[in-house]
Length: 96
Image 1 (spheres, rainbow, N blue to C red):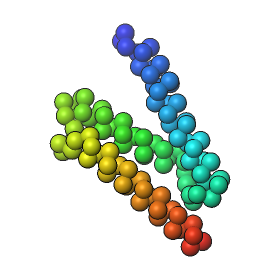
Image 2: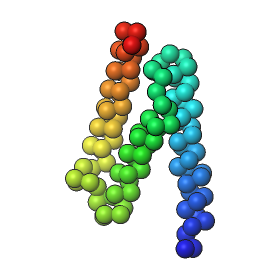
Image 3: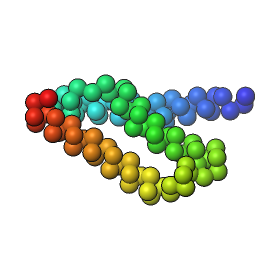
Image 4: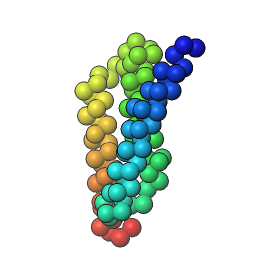
């Protein structure tokens, strides 16, 4: 379709670039001892994929999933990843 070149550009310049930046950041944190040796590509795909899926569902289905507004979604997303980071820190400190 006529949107294919624009779609590819958006994916390369926005989505892929964002994922690559997040992977580099997480790899740095792992190297510094801030996180266990996660599969960085998979973690980033899960974290950013959930953000993209939420946005896509709002547009595709004309509203957010389960009527969860953006503020609730973002607050819960941040809380969930803070818990992951906290658990990772506890595991690291315990020598796991």
